Length: 334
Picture 1 (cartoon, rainbow, N blue to C red):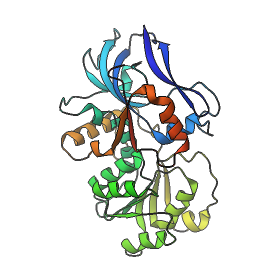
Picture 2: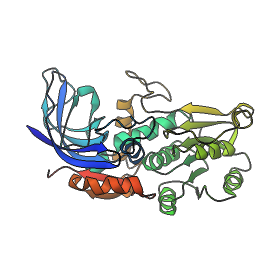
Picture 3: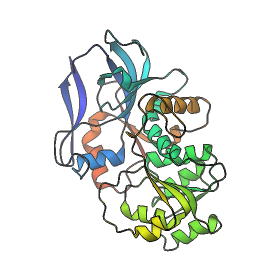
Picture 4: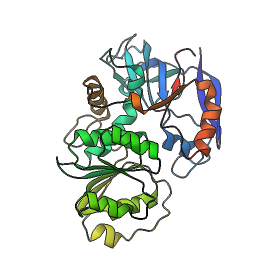
């Protein structure tokens, strides 16, 4: 049996291809995908062959965030059954993903739109970065960078009691969206008085907690300039190239600022504990938040496209400074 897939065949080049179906094993789950979401930062780094993203080793396949319907299960699978709707973690942009049962999470609420469910895995990464800040109600917080991770981090910080909640991004439309989703202040980090603006709305103290999601070392330096005494910065974005010197004594050591690595793979594997939840538990919590109307997903979706358009989508990803925020591939009729 064949499947349709998106393949990164070279630097800046994506192709829509036909592949053999992967073999089923005893703990495998075959999922007919409905939607997969483009993770712009990670996928740009990979298709451009950037350092710390596999370099120029091609071909590559990505697409770790999606939702679909179980078509088949291996003999030892107990978590899900045929016909269940599931999230697929570390799958691919493909019509059919075959993954082990520990990579799927059941979507129990039939009222959740699959377009919303498709974003839950990437949202869980934002939640993991927020949890590690150990935010107290009433502490100030800031999100640097309003890609998908940052937009979700804004909503989770709002739920966690951040006050004031500040966002920073070069894109005015993303700043506007963040304000609609719960931010109190939205600033352009390219403004000469950016740090002064942040200090002003935090009564001169700076921010207690910051989620840095740009992956740009210059933004990391700005986050340090905005940090309060004994502040915490969660490094959620992947800073693949370090090209900006930081005075660690003045900006980190002397003010007692904590830099917290928040890569999604740094999680407990089996059992959650305070501020450190498993991937599965975070996904279930986000699904419940969607059910309860605590977070919003649909306003984040910019476009839903056929995977056949992947060459032009990824050309845009490689060349545009304002790639649409929520780009979703629709596999339902493939």
